[in-house]
Every structure is written in structure tokens, then in C-alpha cells.
Image (cartoon, rainbow, N blue to C red; front, side, top):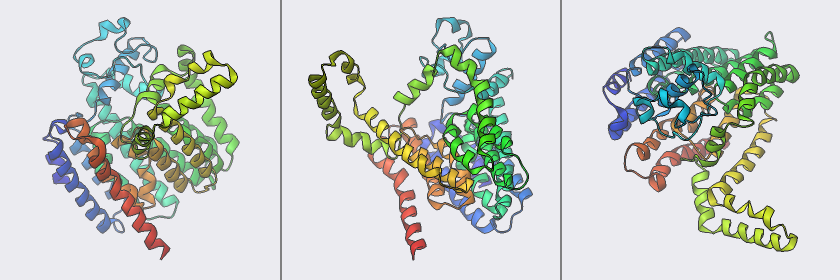
Length: 432
């Protein structure tokens, strides 16, 4: 695996997708072989040493598989210039003096920032460095190694072998997406792991307020952990203290953003309505809705309602929103709400986090490879084979972005069929 990572450093992966996928496949084979052999024997110190070496070897890779780090640098630059990235999209005339080659290479110039203040703070710090992209990757790599250490502590707190953490700490996808591509999820995930570790330890010594503050920090880096706050609160020894700590920290930091934008930042609205890619349920669902003309049926019901009520002007505003993609998102939001309710009944924070963040990924319209970092720590501790297999196949989703290969149907099936098959086989074994 070390040899594999060294070779990866020689490639601009965004322009050699097939070579990249071949090397990534070899890395996962080596990873699976190594962890299966060493899981029961390797200690915490050696786990962290190997994790650090893997990340150091991947750091030199240009982050060309994703353009997120370009936006990170821009948002940090805007913030350090005293401008509001939540109000001003990169194409705003007020930001013209900041434009350079970075601006010209950055996509989505019409969309303001979607990153919370915690992430923006990291970007701002990195923007002061001579090489901001390098600074971002180094800071995230350090945070990721802290997350690996916390995962080892969490495994010990649950009475599990420390080797379970290897399924996350040595995972090629985790190494690539944080140390290689520099995704800010590398700062959010350690906060999530810290929250769950504190929840597990809360039953003896640690106060729920610390867990609430850790969860709040995760939300302030990326909003994803927001969905887990009610579940984590119920799993703490004092839901009220947890909720107050998390609510106060989040409220104090986010209040200026909400006030300055007079509500939800436009970038978040644009992301929720417009972004879509490789959602496991979303992709077939919206295509099915389109095939059976469900959107036309809904519009027909609106026509009938207008005739019955006379609310022509009011209901006319709904028609532009009735299209297959949005209907699919609304259906999946309803399903996620049901699964969210189920999560509130789970008492084990690790199992609950695996369930809830897994549900969030399954119900999402957008699933980029680095989104799997939300569920992989919990999948590692529970050796959830389906999620671990998906961490290997999700790399195929780079093909539509880096080559002429289409997502549907074969790339989509190659990504999602193997973990589904593994899940089905695992359930059959456990039932016998």
C-alpha cells in the first residue's frame, strides 16, 4: 500500500482517471489484506504511525479530482479582505480586485459560499500562507490524524479491539480525500468522533456539555452533524445540558451570518435545490417519476384545485417547482424524516451515528466520494462490510467528472451494486 501511495504522488489524478482507479483498486486490495492480518495485533501507536506515513505520502498529489479546494482558498481570501462571502458570489463586482488565476479556474462563480464560519476560519488562516492549498491540506491532515487517535480511544471506550480503527485510519479513500484532495470534511469528522467518544464516556466521568460543544464545532465546520444533534442529545446523560451547550455555541457563531443574509444564505438554498450527483435512491427515483409523468399528474391536480378553490394566482406560483428532480428530493426528505425518527430510539451512539449518517447518504441527491467519511468511522468500529466495500467502489464516481464515461446506468450500477450484494449476503449469514 505504501508503494501504491508513492506512485500516486507522481500522477495528476484528474487527468489520468483510469490509471488512478487501477491504482486505487490495488490500494484497497492491499488495505484489506493488511487490516485483516493486523487488526488483532497492531497497537495504537503503530496504527497512528502508519496512518501518518500514508497521509504524508499522499500530500504532494495535486487536488485535481475535485475543485472544492479552489473555493476554499477564494472564500478565505474574501473573508480576509473584510468582505462577506455569504452575500457576495465570486462574480460580484465588489470582489473584482481579488480576481486572479484562482478566480478564473474556479467553477460556480455565481453561487455565494455554503461553508459555515468554522470552515471559513480555517480557509482564512490558510489564505495567509504562501501556498494556501498546501496549508489547507496540512491543517486538515493534522485534524484527520487527531480523528484517528480519537477513534482509537472510542474503540477502547467501547471495549472493542483498537485494530477496528484501522478500517478508517488506513482506508485509501479517507487518505486520498483529506490529505490528497483537501476536503474540509477532514475537520468535521474528528469533531463528530469526539462527540461520540464523549457520549460513551459521559456515563462515567465527562459532562454532556463537552459533547454538545464538540458537536457544535462539527456543525460550524459543515452543517451535516446538525441532523444528529437530537439523537446525540437523547444518548447523553443530560439531554438538556447537551442541547444548551450545542445550541448556544451554534447560535452565537451563526447569528451574524443569519442576520447579514436576512435568513438562510443563498448558497445553501442553491445547493439544496440545484445540486445532484449519484444519489443512490435519487437517481433512479427522479428518472422513474419522469418516465411515468408524475409531475404532469401533480400539475393536473393543481389545475383541479384551482377550479375548485379559485386560488389561481396563489397556486400558479407552485408550477415552476413541480418537476421530477424536486419531487424526488421531497420524497426522499420525507423518508429521511422517518429514518430520523427511528434514530432517536437507538441508544448506542456509534450504532446510531452509523444508522443516521448512512440514511443521510442514502437519501441524498448528491453523493460525492468524500461524503462517505461521514459514516466510515462508525462502519469501521462495527466492521460494516457494505459501507467498507462502498468506500472502494465510490471512486468510480470520478469517471463522469474526469472523462467521457456517463454515470447512468453502468457506472452507477458498478458503484452501488457491490455494497448492496455484500449487505444482502451479510444478512443471510447472520440470519442462519
